[in-house]
Length: 291
Image (cartoon, rainbow, N blue to C red; front, side, top):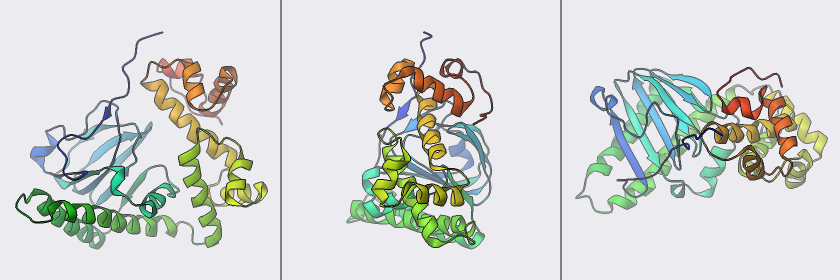
């Protein structure tokens, strides 16, 4: 088998109280920050608040483009790379998962989109930008009493504000749906993100949520457009693609890591979901999923 470089997992260096913050300027754009053109993954969350400019990225094999007044938040473990960058002004904020309380983790895990990326209004941008500027001043004030405590309090507060804006946008797309249906789907997404290696059947999720399988399936389909089984397969095979793309694990080892004892079944399922065999995907062949 071809020897492949593992996906770099960029960890935390030179941080303060679990946080790293950097102002984006034309000079900073020419420097690496924590990003590069090489696919990599972080073991922390990070946020880009772009005031002016453009940034084209690939996140979990999907291309996105950040423009003026863009808000972007990356989950730990997502594979991403910068394709092009011509940003003039903005902010880069990274923070450890330990900074978040359980409620805030739930908010993030219950997002219906796999990629948190929106363009916000000028008023919303000014609101978030003024907050992060204050955080930046605290971050760089070495003489400030209670500096670490303030940083640890302000970072979750900023994220609460950012997610409040994001959820307003997300919910605007579900105005015709019952609130209970959206709530059930959010809970399902949270369980799936945290348990996709161990829970593979719709009945397992339904049991955890105290609803019937048919009700869960109908509800998730009404909100997302897809049945529960489809969502499960997509989540599992996304991680499979991450591991195939940049790891030396064999297909059998990847199957086992994702909870499949039967390598041949895993290979058939991967081919059905992704539209290409694991071996061909690893070799760089790309195609559109027919699943």
